[in-house]
Image 1 (tube, protein in one colour):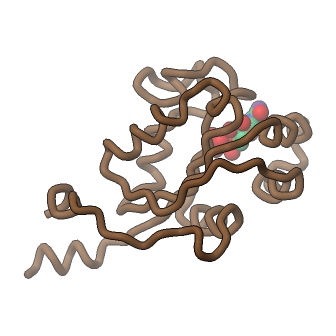
Image 2 (image 1 turned 90 degrees about the horizontal axis):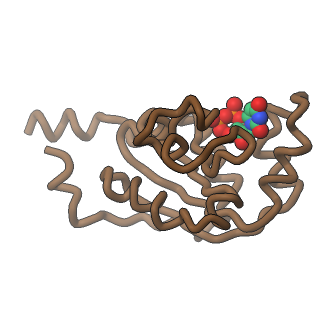
Length: 160
Ligand code: UDP
């Protein structure tokens, strides 16, 4: 009873994870999805999507004063991305660890950027940096009805 009560009190968070256009072009979609699946997080939304300039600018609006902003928008809109919503206790910090440092040359081997990328401007993947941004970004990139609520059969084998 007590462990179950404690587990139910644990906060389930959401993260918006996106394979950027270079990750799609380089054939890394399956590899990236696989890492989140194998870790034990729950996929609740998934689509291949060509995003508009407006959406990219909204997503990265906190960076709009940076010198690299125009190139960043050009990069994100340069081809389809894979938009994903993932869910789990502790998902946001854990996803950031799986992804690795913004600069792939600083990212540890074993992380996605550490294993597959060499430059900040082509760092193949995005992951929300807080649970609040996770919610905000999922609401921005997905329409109502595009997300699925479901219970994976592995759930009792992942958490006691
Ligand atoms: N970026 C860039 N040049 C920089 C810093 C960031 O092109 O000097 C891009 C890069 O694609 C990065 C994104 O802007 O992933 C968002 O930057 P942020 O600092 O939020 O890094 P992240 O959360 O993606 O690791």
